[in-house]
Length: 284
Picture 1 (tube, rainbow, N blue to C red):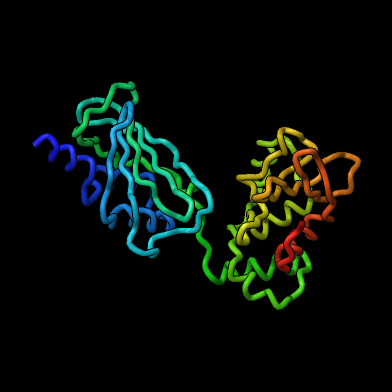
Picture 2: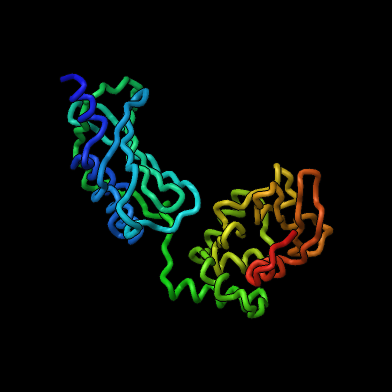
């Protein structure tokens, strides 16, 4: 009997109504991407649970088809929210988007650090007014928006039409345009003034993925190993990077390939680097 109770708690066919209520707060209704993610939870074929030190996690091990997936290339954690329970405790909730656009599920922990008992179910006080901004969820672009970003970026960098173009365009994954305010916020975070071409680039697409190559957007761009001379814009699987040269005496918008021992090859301007990627010429 105790084994049956343990199995019933550790694996169920659905999230509880309380868990779905929390997920709906974390995934607000005014976002199409949030609706898709919420439906992954609502229609999950099975839900797995495990007790952690001070709470528990419920996860979605798989989804049926790709109808509810969104575009996401890396893990993104939601903000944490604090909710009171009917017993007077406070619980902390968080969810995540996994690479490939999968919803992880829901993590729950006690704010006071007390342990969670196996088989204990969630009973929260409903918080109708609590709302989380959907800004943490990646925006999903329509096919028309993707085509527009491709055309505008190709014109911006001067990429020519090549026999590889149809295949390259089918692999092109842009992001929503960055606003001037978002650029200012990132400049403030890094304490840097971005080169003109990078500002122009993110206002067309705030980064893009092209198979195993990319140009980073504002959320991911960083200095190379803390060296403020080099702003990383394209990491590669072979442990080299492409970085923009931020040294005062360097020509503006210049990019270099950098290996572990420092700059190894000049690649021209950012426009030229993007042009090379869009034309399908892998840089070596």
